[in-house]
Amino acid sequence: MKRLILALPLIAAACTVAPPPPPRIAAPKPVPVVVPPRPSAPVDWRDKPYTPGAWRYADRSAAYGQDGAPPLFVMQCDLSRRLVILSVAGAVPMLTIRTSYSERNWPAQVGANGRTQISFTANDPALDQIAFSRGRFSVAGPGLAEIDVPAWAEPSRVIEDCRS
Image 1: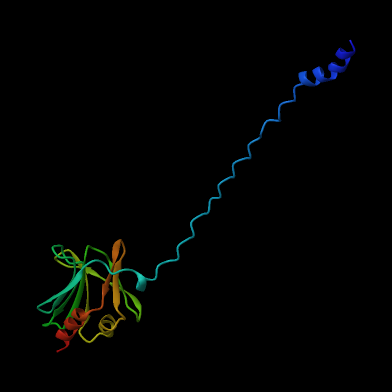
Image 2: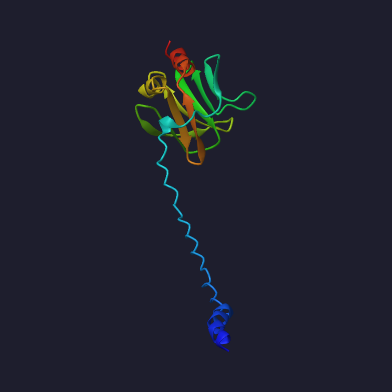
């Protein structure tokens, strides 16, 4: 019996079951941080890419646009009246011409060909601003996509055609 008494603590220790470990609590998933997009700064018209196309000159007229499509912008000399006529596709009441010198709105008319046009006398300083604008000028109107064109030699040639 003595042996049994001595063995009881060993038997009791063997029968004791350790309590299960506490359940693991998963760490809460981090809440995703939503960073609102940074408002983009308005793009300066001088930094926009040119409107796709190229200049073509023929018979006192320069046209800007893509091959095989009607021109987006035309400058032509009416030598008999000494006028330089600028025209764009579409019918709008006003055209805005932006150069590196200024931005001005001009009242426009729709010609018989359905193009909106404005005209300048051959010696109008606005034509010099177009010809000498730093690398580009643009033409726009209400509801009309802005046309950003390079200030290449073709517009200057039309102006000179009307002045000579």
